Image (tube, rainbow, N blue to C red):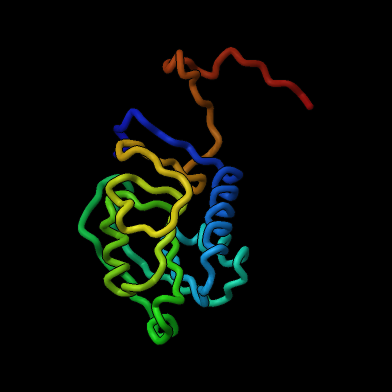
Length: 173
């Protein structure tokens, strides 16, 4: 996956803006009494959406689809949903994830909550049929670098990919 020539780095500011845009879209739908965050990627957007929509019941479903962070493997549900969620009508449940890629993770979660509303911040074409609401579509061959996956470092100019940060002087502030 990292080998893709297309990368989409997302800063904290941009991610927060996009997650709030997701909440804005979901507010017009309404009727949600609980959120299920798909871990790990869904934790941050779920917190933002929960705050914006005033939802206090937040649950997680822990699903692993990537192993060694870059290699997609078989879907594993590491922690299923609790009765707190399963006891309520699934139509009142909002499932939040950061991204739908192939749709495999979304399908595993939807198998548990068939009538829940599935929302993601970002969506790739293969996964779109599994999502009810999203903010930004990215191409299937694009790798998204989320802010929790990255740190601040020198970025080579697009036209000079072998450029190094040497030769730059520091300024005192």
